Image (cartoon, rainbow, N blue to C red; front, side, top):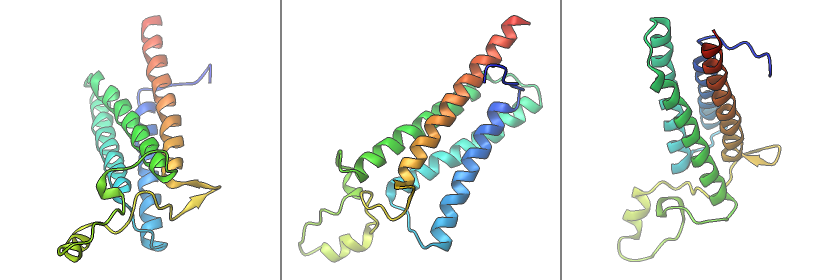
Length: 166
């Protein structure tokens, strides 16, 4: 990676493409394989939608030569948030810690039980419905988010270093 050629679109296109691919895969698994997402899965998707949106805005700013440096830092921050959410979700799946009440199945039976059950998402965050190479989708999202985060920070560092050397 030492002689990596970083152009002004590298950070944006990397972020945009990886996040878009993750979203497409999530929806393919949901629609074709009937894997309903839990509450945390939906929140992780929301982060990736924000990454896609901010990446498109950043791409437009770079294309128009607007210098909004904070947008690239915002993209990196969103990838960090994706990583944190993935680790949190994976920890719930592995019973390392408990999730929020909407992620658990602790049901208190009383007169309003049916009404409460119908108003809640039936998919529990600790249930792993799909694994690839013995790792849940939350685990994969964490690994990918960590890798992309490191790559984007490196790209930002190299692009700043190249500006100072010129």
